Amino acid sequence: MVRKKIVRRAGIVSVGKYMPPNVVTNFDLEKIVDTSDEWIRERTGIIERHMVKNGEKQSDLALIASREALARAGWSPKDLDMIIVGTVTPDHIFPSSANLLAGKLGAIGAPSYDVLAACSGFLYSLWQGVVAIESGRADRVLVVGSEIMSTLINWEDRSTCVLFGDGAGVVLLKAVDAPYGIHDMEIGSDGRFYDLLHMKAGGSAYPATHETVEKRMHTLYMEGSEVFKLAVRKMTEISESLLERNRIRPEQLGCFIAHQANIRIIDSTTKRLRLKPNQVYNNIDKYGNTTSATIPTCLYEAEEQGMIKKGDWVLLISFGAGLTWGGILMKWAVDRLPKTEEVAVDTVSDVLSTKLRPGGDWANQ
Ligand code: UT7
Image (cartoon, rainbow, N blue to C red; front, side, top):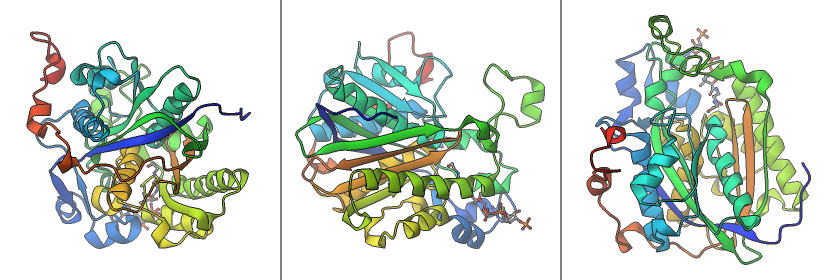
């Protein structure tokens, strides 16, 4: 891909996160399928995950996380020029979850759309937001990764049902002064491997019938070990290419965040890159694989724990179904963000009671 000279640089200036409170442990899963806490921990690094229980929608998780990010930046939803949501679990096929999120936020008039790129959904969405700012078409963009993966799980397939969780993470983007902000990025895909990780039914190829439901075609299918090998190879390759062409040595990275699919994938990748543990942030142990939400939730927590400071090099890397992949290299653009307790954020129940429009609120029921 041709790289053009960037005249205006975009940077992340706030973050938000929301995990539904209901926690499902490995021991809970032992009661459902033939598995063990030991197998799940050793083979994946996952100890527990969060899953919706009280009817929260995917756009609700996104809404709570978005309100937090906006409050921490001191922005009003009316300031937003664009809302992009990476997800494979939108509330409905249409309208998009981004449309519903924009409506619930009161960001009326702002373009809003979903990006379907599976585990790379957040980095694809971030890529688009950055391009919009670099081109001067937008000044303030909300980028979301939000999923309710628990709705796609085949609870009879022990090789996948233990892996996933629900949650949302968001970032706010705006133009920032050099040398801060996003320096380089790369996204790509290879559709020849579409079948390794997919959900067959639910789209126009296999609309819902008794047969699609009986055959569990509305649930996720994965050939795990194939995806595993490709993930390690591709995530290492993108990381090396972004670092080399920007003349940054791995030891200069302040924080490396990879899509959280399996701790062994991340460990193999970081070993090949010769990164030290204190340069890598993971949260797969607490949340499992939340698809497009893994990277923004890691970013949120790394910032919260003081691991990322203004001026640090941060590298974000993803790989997933499609196949799709992405990498974004940035110099962190902000001083420590205000803690959520220090800013006025609506309570979760207030946020969840947001009505889209009196009398027309089926999307919220
Ligand atoms: O987010 C998008 C990208 N996703 C990924 O990158 C995921 C990539 N893949 C993986 O993370 C791993 O391949 C898995 C975690 C899915 C599977 O781990 P694995 O080490 O590749 O296991 P495997 O599929 O080779 O299976 C090894 C054994 C099998 O038993 P046999 O045939 O050797 O007797 C499985 O049946 O482990 C068995 N197994 C389990 N045992 C207990 C598979 N799942 C489970 C389970 N509990 N939950």
